[in-house]
Image 1: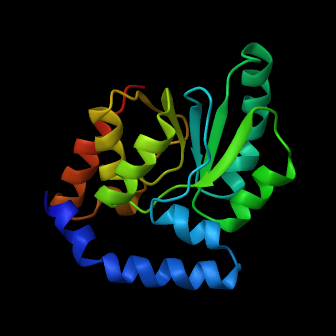
Image 2 (image 1 turned 180 degrees about the vertical axis):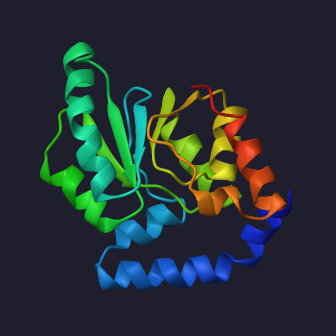
Image 3 (image 1 turned 135 degrees about the horizontal axis):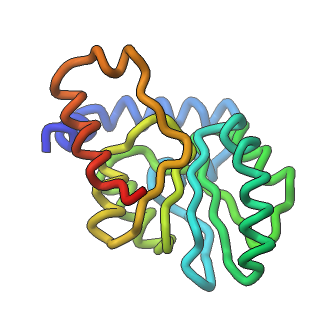
Length: 175
């Protein structure tokens, strides 16, 4: 609950930062999707893979190729936090795969994303944890699998409140 209140209080900062990045990259899509609007339509509920940026996208691409071979009718959604990550996804012209930006971890943005996409599973290729995103997935019966997770020494030596947020989020992860 405290985390949700903090995100509400920080909303103006999130908004201005998102506006700054969207202006830098001249991307209205980035602005809208990070705020939880204008997501691509899918015929079927996709397998959703979240890759933070370029490194995670490049790491995931060989696995995506295997998934596409084994599940040729399946649709995939790759989300990134950055325009550079989006560029790599779009450059590869992947079959049955769309890209969009992961919304900022606020209740409204995440809720709109989950309702619009209706993913069958969330596969996370990022070391950050997003408490509201994980809570929304759990509430909507969307399994979460972290395939690239680690906690740094800095994270382990942080405040008890942050550790509690991480613990609560990790308790919602299925694999």
